[in-house]
Length: 148
Image (cartoon, rainbow, N blue to C red; front, side, top):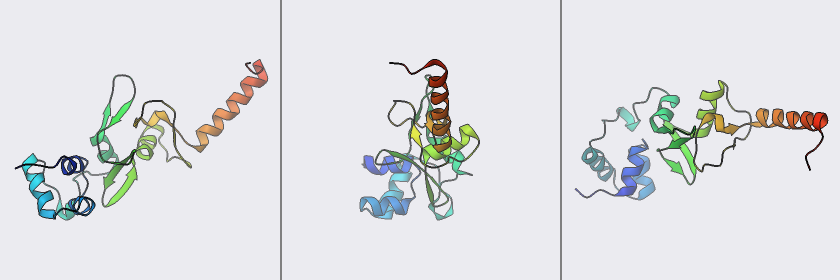
């Protein structure tokens, strides 16, 4: 059977069959046949992946590198990595941040490294971290003067 690369990518990212069919304009049977042809694990009732939590779904698609960065191998919406769990979709950086810092991020997340697509939790800053960094920068300037 000839398989479409776009269907394969979405299946490997644990995107539900119905969503794949609608997004790509193919039948659900085409998606199911591709799933079988790839020998992927059987999905649980309702088409949801068998991950027990969003964190497990994140870990299934986060590939740690030797340099501290984490490459995302799952589904992306544009350039935003997405975790699917229990019919919910959550940006992967939010889950990574929570796993790394032990708390939910406050406000918008910004990546602090220069590797495109990195989803390492320690490579993101939320509003609280950015505010602390600004206070530290101000204290440094007060003590040592501004660098020119």
